[in-house]
Length: 270
Image (cartoon, rainbow, N blue to C red; front, side):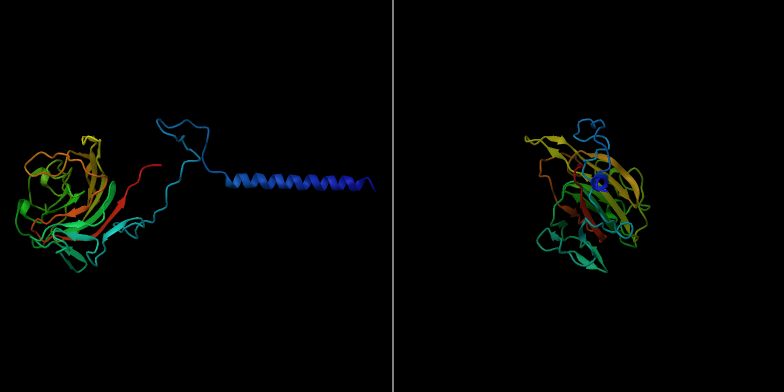
């Protein structure tokens, strides 16, 4: 009888130890990051293919429906006021009517108080109905990124103009791939992906700006290279500037309406 007690005690100790090891094994398995640490490194990168230690992307909640601002967007206009904007001469002179900004011809542009670098930009606009004027005189405005790189806004529904002045053009540089505008009076959507230019210390361009534009969900610019600041009847040129700039809505004399304007700064890949 006395010889069994040490055996029972040893068995109990071994069982407890096995249970502890099992628990640690389960804990390690539970805490293990998905991925690998023995795969090749990506070219010129510090991360491996399927790297277990590579940071996960942050979670962003999409808008409830297409065109709504996601959770990380900066909302520049939500249909209420112009507090996120300034005018050419101080306070904005444009009007807010029925949840939309209306261009007040001759009062100057509208410029965002906040500045952005690489960004995703969404806005919606509507040309006056019934239409008035022709060519560049009909429903004309523009969104100028950094206040200098213009994506044209124009009522081009049955209204021809020069190719690089169409709605969705990089004005004076790249015509849109297609004309995807709706009739005047209807709301049009622009979704813009903008990569800002980078400059060397001496002011020369290290990498130019690029832009992708969707008009009403249709791609009209596909990673188009911007050759410089907007120019009329002249060649665009770059002038060195900082890494961020404002969003500018142009006063071209036509009572174009705007709504649902938001911007998402685009970060760098980790």
